[in-house]
Image (cartoon, rainbow, N blue to C red; front, side, top):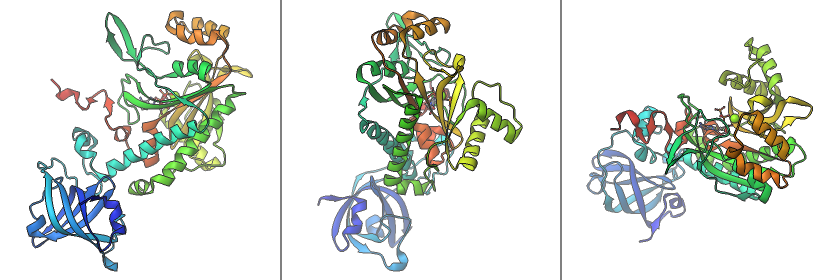
Amino acid sequence: MERTLVEDTINKIGETITLKGWVNTKRDHSKIVFIDLRDRTGLIQIVGTGDLLGSLKLEDVVSIEGLVKARPEKMINPDLTTGTVEIEALKLAVLSHSAELPIDMSKETLEVELPTLLDYRSLSFRHPKIQAIFKVQAVVIDAFRRALMEKDFLEFQAPSIINAVPEGGSEVFKVDYFDHEAYLSQSPQLYKSLLTTAFERVFSVNHIFRAEPSATTRHLTEAVSLDAEFNFIESVDEVLDMEEYVVRYIFDEVQQHCQKELALFNATIPLMSEKFPIIKLRDAQEIIFERTGRDCRTEKDLAPDDEREICAWAKEEKGSDLVFVSHFLTKKKPFYCYPDPADPEYALSVDLLCRGVEWSSGGQRLNDYETILKNVHEWGLKEEDVALYLQAFKFGSPPLGGFALGAERITMYILGLKNVREASMFPRDMERIDLRLSSAK
Ligand code: ATP
Ligand code: MG
């Protein structure tokens, strides 16, 4: 008999169907046994005799023929999409046996510490709440793509192996590259910018690699970056407008397609005012000083506490979970950042913060060849390390800008996860590449 998916059972009351999936939970009352069967579309309750279902173990893979029955009113389970029906099992075939489970998968939330959850990553993916994280992430990435394709951006594939690190080398992984030294790319920044001089509007969904030597809850050593860059801009405002459009598009899609997933985490889409507020770094630092007495007014960037504080301010004063912070010190930014003509000590570089943390960095970039070349020298870089970049800007290059959003951070802060590792299928950090490095030989 053709397979019916769990989510389709609610339309098949009175029919005999075949379901295939995993035994998610089992309640054994000896003569009568209840199981929740799981497939990619959800969970459904199956009831059968002890003779038929009694020997099943959790995570066994089964094919069950059964009759779809409407549940009596008082037995309806509102927490389950299929809570209005249950299946009376008639025939069973076990397609694959599972070994004894090392962790308890039956709870609504996996009650294990994150390291254990990651030690059993292949298994933890099967938990509905873990699956929900990656469904949301897939929608986020898909929405990013579609938002930009609707604006006529071309998707490109960013390289991961690069020959030099003009943006500074302390947080970069070295690679043995035949007889040479190469590096893993920290960002496709230079590639996306140079591509605008040919394609005008480009974006990429790519992996970035950072040898972050600290263990924070928001840094991975390999992360997914959502990068966009475009030219023929009149001002940096166009970059911010594009970013705001993309972020709103992402939220709309998550709102539309991830109701079930948001509910599992009791999560809501970030609060948005009519327009995302923007504040200069200096003004943000003043506000933080006034609100907390903490003096960060000479710092070049916002520390984690400052990011939380300015987000709290934006929520209270502007009714927004999101806030742009602009005008970082030009000299502390990479060589391609565009100084504000009105105040060149500060650059037209802009971070987007949400729910207390940085989600993205972006801004306007220099497009004048001579100025870029001058900066390359002033920043102490080698011309040959940025040769391809310079080449692009030597031969006609319109004003440009762009931004990069972290896919794991977005997922983490939409769902209110405690650690960015939860939002990465295979998180890499100082202590882990799939397995704990300390346990590797
Ligand atoms: P932070 O200051 O939070 O360390 P950053 O300024 O170094 O971030 P950018 O180079 O601006 O990061 O990268 C753009 C975006 O990519 C960040 O805003 C963030 O969302 C994401 N991102 C950067 N580094 C990491 C990382 N190590 N792990 C996870 N996401 C990251
Ligand atoms: Mg940044």
